[in-house]
Image (cartoon, rainbow, N blue to C red; front, side):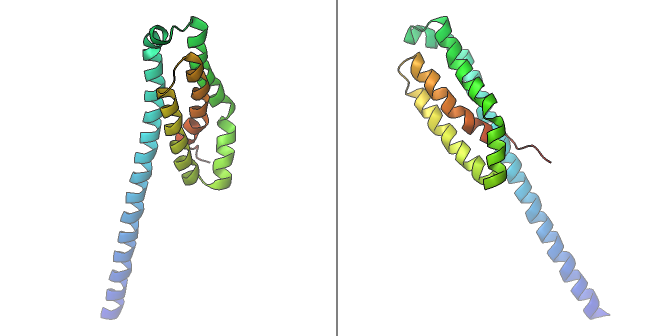
Length: 139
């Protein structure tokens, strides 16, 4: 009887440690997804708030400012299904990491922009990566 009890206790302890490891992994996943979504929302908010300063600094017209926003939004909408398909093919983790890296590079290019055309052209570079940073839909 004692041998059975000791074996059962070992198995129960092993299950608990596997469960806590799985729970810790879920929290890291949640943290990464929340950070990615936060980056996306912050990025769009910063660009919208900075539009008057962009207009003054670059001498941009209203259509130029509209293209800065619309180029990002249009590319994001068009590539939404593509990013989901690629995540299904290559894995969500790889797509998330790749998307975060491309998003960071696109944001750097936007920071180095010298005019509204540069902003409009580097904005779509962030959009596919931005979609990869957003949380995948569960099935």
